[in-house]
Length: 371
Image (cartoon, rainbow, N blue to C red):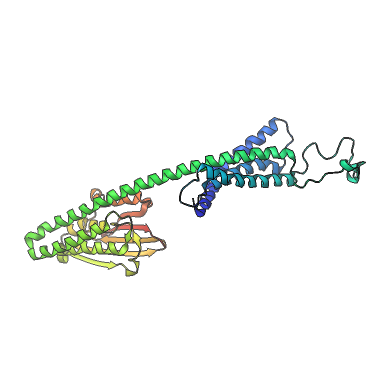
């Protein structure tokens, strides 16, 4: 991983309930064992120390194994060990220094037999007696703590490798699921191209008999529509302006077929056309409004297309008059395909809302867009 990814993974470990759960459980077992063995009751700091140690292990031990400087989720065993050894050695030394500074001399050192408090304060009978003088260590770590340090270092190296390998497997599993979702989203997106063309051609069959001149113009528009659909291809992101072009071509065909029965209004700022969204998100909403609303009304109906930016979301609202869609119509191929693609692309469940507002059928879509 790169430095930013390593720091993010470390931060995520501090927020996992299992990290704190494991630390709390270890602390309870450790202190419970002390009580069962009849050892002196620990102070507040001693009571928290086992849990703090485990937290330190779980959060920081995997860090050197994950640092690669590239996109790989974990370093090779040789490189990981070479990075983890000095890292855990530094952490171990820091822990030992803290223990040495906080704990003072270990049990068994200090006042000898027969030395009362007064003698200890005055230095006792051994003051100035060469080898019996109180010794001052250059490093305030008792030799007994070094045994704990070696265990700390060994356990930290092993635990760091285990945790880093587990997170690597989790990342690869997430990446595999994401790749499968994207592949399925591309398949569903590919299904929309023939669906759009099928509906467009079906609408032109009547026009060929009734108005051959208009049918000829419609075929030109149909060729442009096909070209636009091919341009979308299997891309997962496309500028909003290309979606606008697709909707305009589709409406051009519908105007030739419906004539004055189609009354439309737009509120789509050109300034938003540079935003990138998944392709074929708005066109199915417009197609659904025309097919199940406007075209079924005897006198036609109105179509309103509104696109706006609301914070981090792009809000699309497509409303139409005409008969209310039935449950089957409201879940036709276009909208069902759209809902499934939204789910695969990670959109929240309420990203697409289809409802009735008075005489209007409203489809509202919210998409997260980059700032």
